[in-house]
Length: 394
Image 1 (cartoon, one colour):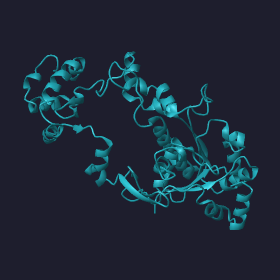
Image 2 (spheres, one colour):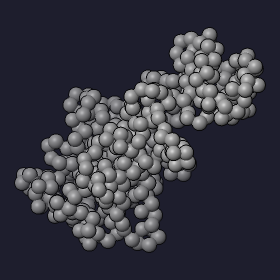
Image 3 (spheres, one colour):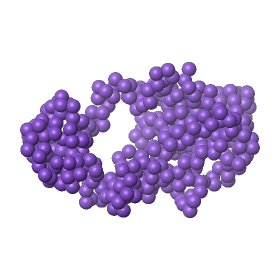
Image 4 (cartoon, one colour):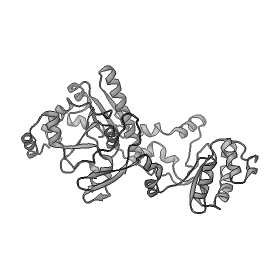
């Protein structure tokens, strides 16, 4: 039995941060009831790429969930939702602050209906503070949270991180908050509100950049592929491409110098310590590029791995998908969607020895489980559900 099997989540979230959070919970058994507006559903159903009319983007984020449609413009739908809250453990939403209150289903209302409810809100800037009403997308919080200012080529323009880390990291922190709240409730019986701001999450992951600025007062800038305080620790140019080399201490540095047949570099005053190597990083980059460009990426990888020096090719996505380690760890999985057919997607990265997560069902069609969920949670009949659909409540 999966560890979250009996946890019922009413998931009102859409697009990425919230759905990523509920996907993490679903992979470990949570009963995710995805509540979508009729006819259009989650906004991401309209995002490409598509297989037929089905969004691959949507399908990649909503596996292991069930879909019900509810029209919150109708009071009957609001009343129905409140009844569902009585049977739920978690309500998850990623609306702008105040939206749920406009519907009459904010935390203050829901906790009176179910004092044990865990209400998780993931928004751009959180539910408090001067920015709480500002709209936000991933790129907005990447920009305001600082990560874009340290990403990109040295001396170049700031760059957005290639994956939507503003959304994804917030989704992960929200899942962490929900799990912490569930544990607290198991100990005390108390529910609570979990308030996660995407910008807060960006600040939380600045690690080295934050530490450097707070200790030195020097504002970090983009440094390309290199590490700002460890050298050599970046990409180098080989005969047919690029490779990463990370000689993160003096022992590995000495090994590297001997491997590339440049033992003279060990005693070179410019490179005798990590601090010196970092101070003279551009000179060292030129020297190492001159060495590495005489062999192929794979030839260097073979030699470096044999010597125990951390290294890697810079894989394109097609190479990641076919990588033997990725496949051995079951990180590419396949589901059989009722419309789109067989779909491959990323697997579950957390490996548990006793209660493993898994991808069991494909993303749902819009409203696919409406009748099933209302019968299960509220004991409604097929005729009652059909009547609500006829009135545009569902």
